[in-house]
Amino acid sequence: MTIESTAVNAERASYSTAAAQPAAKQTRVRYLILAMLFLVTVINYADRATLSITGPVISKELGINAAEMGFIFSAFGWAYVLGQLPGGWLLDRYGSKIVYGLSIFIWSVFTLMQGSIGFLAGGTAVATLFALRFAVGFAEAPSFPGNSRVVAAWFPGQERATASAIFNSAQYFATVLFAPLMGWLTHSFGWHWVFGVMGGLGIVMAGVWMKTVYAPKDHPRINQAELDHIAAGGGLVNMDDGQKKAVSAEQGGAKWDYIRQLFASRMMVGIFLGQFCINAITYFFITWFPVYLVQARGMSILNAGFIASIPAICGFVGGILGGVMSDAMLRRGYSLTAARKTPIVLGMVMSMAMIACNYTDLQWVIVSLMALAFFGKGIGALGWAVMSDCAPKEITGLSGGVFNMCGNLSSISTPIIIGYIIQSSGSFNGALVFVGANALIAAVSYLVVVGEIKRMELKK
Image 1 (cartoon, rainbow, N blue to C red):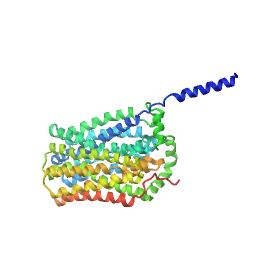
Image 2: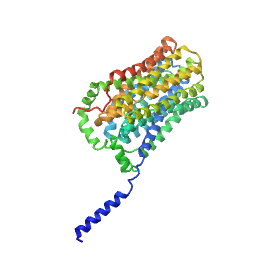
Image 3: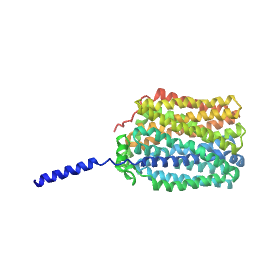
Image 4: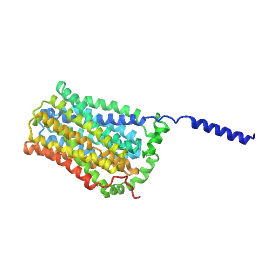
């Protein structure tokens, strides 16, 4: 036997042994990443809701009327919108881990500082509270574009709606978990404690994020089998490869043209409009809804904190169900367009149920209708899944920032409009009609304007 034939036989034996070995078991690190997205989004929305829980006491203590409170509520939205494009660009430039981690830390510090406004009075207190809410909004700007970016990198297409629904449903879980806690803290210890507890919790979470979250190829616990599974399903596992150079060299001159292309797309414009209207429902629930329960329905702050958690539970269930339904439709052969649009349209129709609260004084009926509306809003809140599906792969962070900027213009308009409706009419009836109309427009936008849902290709 020749040396060559011996080598060939040895190679064949080695190949046969390798082939006989079972394939490496796929790790599930992407679910750990999703858990982190869920937890930080819970903190995110709980910090946004601190003022809605403490608002009735603060407004009474500082002499703030409904219109002024509407402007204070809107401070977050102004900054959040202004921060979207810089936040998206920073995510594409430096990656999600660093930018998002700093974002969590900074917004938590400003949340903590809001507890100090009790030492001020009159216009100074109002201006300081507005400024601090503005700072929280600007610091939180990279959060949801970051969520979308992480999901696009870590999850294949047929798992993406469920993953997006889970992190998006954290907004409801935040109310379920923290509204009763914040109501109890306000009732038992004073409203200052709400900001101290929530700010401190966020600072701790920033440290946990930095120890846990990595890009797919950099995570120390992922194996090749999971990486291949994500990539085969369309996950953008190479999203950050060379991104720093590409973004700094190319986007400086091209990013404004990319943004122009986003607004030139009928699909994108329809998605942006739909998100604006869906977020109007969200911002009613996290700003004026507890005030509605106290001022219009005569509940105590403590009871309002607990009652507000009931619709939130329904929103959480609906949020998970919407994502699962969408991915299930996709696996059963429905088109991406049908799988994403169906839950959105059905959910928005259900959200219009809140208008019926104007025709009853029974508290259990009101709570049931709001729970149905919030359940529907949860089912229909798939905008981030749609963005993960259709955002141009070169600018996932920037396009997510544009999407979130457009959607959160309603975080400015909704609190102010509702505040003026209440101030001028002395009633919440018109406010509920306004929010229900936004749900209708969102459904029409997805049905008529959006068209086929697919990944957008940029023109270089």
